[in-house]
Length: 105
Image (cartoon, rainbow, N blue to C red):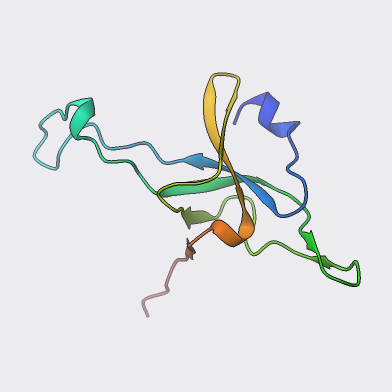
């Protein structure tokens, strides 16, 4: 994580996400050209705002925390570049889902 990200704090219900990198090789080991690589709709939460305010002024906390892996919409959010790394700033309500580990006992 870059040092600039440590100093960037999203406001309200906004979340800073680092997108997952698209695969550059197929499962068989063939190098994929950039034109055939799919846009990855997954990412890792890097920073979170405190949450949004309800009608009474109480804070509604965001539904994810730093380090969570999330599913993103194909379009939306604001692209940011901090110290040569690209991030996505998105509202909590725009996140489609969160990946969780399932214990297989």
